[in-house]
Length: 159
Ligand SMILES: Cc1cc2nc3c(=O)[nH]c(=O)nc-3n(C[C@H](O)[C@H](O)[C@H](O)COP(=O)(O)O)c2cc1C
Image 1 (cartoon, rainbow, N blue to C red):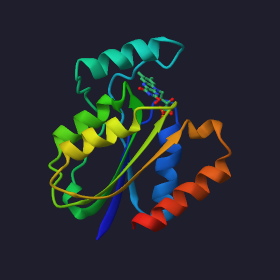
Image 2: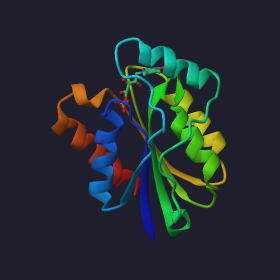
Image 3: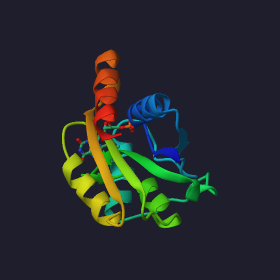
């Protein structure tokens, strides 16, 4: 049975956690990349990203997954945008049928919104077994070794 880590990251925090999980579990990893990325500079990202969440956009992705059925465990990672998951995750969720899988959710944020986001994901993916969730505050600004220990401990608890 195989594990997949699938995630979106605009500024690298969620990527950092995704890479850690994939390395620790020796799993496959898929980074969701929108065809048209939100501008990263300054305030523009909040305006464009916020609008995208508000209008429930499903941006087209550059990559598609063809062997999704091979995986029985999926870790889904996202930055928190407006207390929700980022729009590329919406696109992914509407591109694949996820049921009967074991799931883990991970999210990065600047201080709030993870609970709401995880609740939304749980409702969206209710036909699965949730192993657990973890959220981290802008981990790239933290002591990376501490973050690694925290994530590894969580993985031991949920897998
Ligand atoms: C459009 C947008 C909306 C955001 N909304 C929230 C939010 O509701 N709550 C929060 O704590 N952080 C929010 N943030 C901050 C990011 O979630 C946070 O910096 C995260 O660590 C970034 O992850 P990344 O580096 O993987 O992109 C938002 C950032 C953007 C760009």
